[in-house]
Structure formats: C-alpha cells, structure tokens
Image (tube, one colour):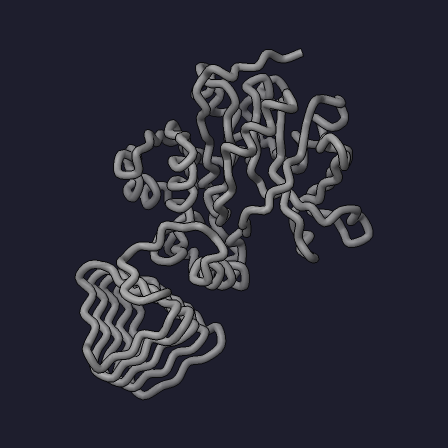
Amino acid sequence: MFSFRNSKPVKAFVMSAGAGTRLRPLTFSIPKPMVPIVNKPVLEHTIENLARHNIRDIKMNLHYRPDMIRDYFGDGFPWGVKISYSFEKKLLGTAGGVKKCEDFFADCGSFVVMSGDGLTDVDISEVLDFHRRKKSIATMLLKEVDSKFEYGVTLCDAKTGRIKQFIEKPRWSDVFSNTVNTGIYVFEPEIFRYIPRGRFYDFGQQLWPQLLKLRLSIYGFVTKSYWTDVGNLKEYRQGQRDALDGKIRLNIPGAEIKKGIFVSNGAQIHKSARLLAPCVIGRYVKVSENAVIGPYTVIAARSVISKGASVSNSILWGRVRVAPRVKLDNCIIGYRARVVSDISVFEGTILNLE
C-alpha cells in the first residue's frame, strides 16, 4: 500500500509540448498552448486556474517552438507562480514527459497533471479532496459529453467512483459510457513505479490500462465544470463563444464598459463606431469611424479596424489591419494579416501571413 503525503505541497505538471496539427494553419506559427482565447493564450488560463487553487509550483514540458512559451511565461512571477521547464527534443509521450521530471515531484504530496491546451475552470481543490478521501493513487477527471468519442471513455462504479473500464479513443462499437477522459489527473508520487524511464509512454494508451489491470486504487471524478479541448477549429471557436457567454469562469482582459463589452488599455474607439455585446477589444486596438464590431468578436492588440468596416463572429489575432468597408463574418484572422478594401469574407476563412 502506498503512503499518502497530505501535509506536503501540491505541484502541477502542465503538458505544453503539442504542435496542434488539427489547428493548422493557425499553429504553423505558434504552439497549440499559445492559441488565444479572449486575447490570452489558452495556457495562461490554465496557469491562472492553478494559482486560484494555490498550486504555485509548476513544471511545463516543451517541444514545438519552445522559446515562444518560455519567453511569454518566464519564471511565472507575474501570475504569482514559479514555473520551470523540461525540453523534449524527442517527444516522450504524456506519461513519459512526466517521468522525465520525477525529481521535481520528490518533495511534494499529490500532484496535478493538466493539458496546456485544455480550456477549463475545474475546481481543482474539489478534485484533490475527492482523491484524498478515496485514498486513490490516480484520479482521472471525467466529463459527460453527448457524442464526442475521440477521447478515452471511462466507466466507473456508480457508488464509489472506482474506475472499472477504460478505452482510449474507442471505435463506436466499443463505446460503453458517455464520460470521457479530460486529460486532467491527480497522482500520488508512487505512480512513477509504473512508468518506464527514458522511452515513450502514454497515459491513455498505456498507463491507465496498466493500473486497471493491476487492480490498483484508481478513481474517476465526474466534473460539472466547463471543459473542452481546444483541439480543432470547431472546438476553438466554441471555446471563444462559451467564454464570451460566461459559461466558463475566465479572467477576460480589459474593463467591462458595458455588459459583455470588454475594452483594454490604449484602445481607441471612434464615437461613431458601434460595439455590440459580447465582444473583446484588445490593447491599442483602433476602431475607426462608422466601424461595427458585432457580437462574438475578439480583436487582439494593435489591430486596426478601418472606416466603415464590419467585423462579427470573428477572432483577430493581433496587429491585423482591416481596410475600409471590409465585411468579416465568422472568420479567424492570423497575426499581422491584411484584409484589403471592399471585400467580404465569410464562414470560417483563416488568414495567417506568418
């Protein structure tokens, strides 16, 4: 039987090595955890949630464009946390990456593993409490979904929550539950006994099935909190809309000048321009004469919306220039893109010039 270390501090490992191939072409220029949600990297929302629950010692693994993440977050001081990094020249898998950092967890009790590209406001303290009450060696955070089975599905004992069955990325014929693996876990340090060193090893494909086969004390906690994997363009758009609708608790940057309208420092809004809720206007954005910013629009820093332009249901990533009389609807516009005069762009078009 493993020993519990309730009195020791909780640490976190945030998986940040993903390249985000399903979000291309957006992720040709940035790593997936840096994809913005309401003008902050999705990874920043994860860090803020950890800090909210007083988890302040964080390790991130890096692989794709590592300097972009390291330069943005540094040592974590602005967020009130301490961040250190583990670079993987060759990917080690979700569990293998954590094993590489085993020494980081030597002086802690329970520890949390989260995905840097998952969007959630999960109550981590509640999950930790459940984990400790069950004396679990490994607890998996689960979410009930309608029909999204590209994630592992899990079946738990209805009374105790103990995991009885688990299949990573099942076929439709294998589906036995609508509770999916969110990729958020709580472990005891003893878990490292079951993860081999120095080779690729995956939580879903290898570790969890092994723990189940060994009949170890593993549990599933079904959360009612918001969670989505910002894994493809559809989910990315939905995450933005849900944030603007207040379905997830996030720190949206800027002052809420009217209900649902957030405007950051340095933004210039012409008196004849119209802002329609919900929307977010970033730092030093210029919205010119007679321009219209429609609902569900997020415009990042130093973008320019020219005279008579209309932007709705769209995400502009920063330093974008929208020329006069342009109409954009349901678009994602990449960094430094230029949208020329007198055109209309509709339905999911992505422009990314970097």
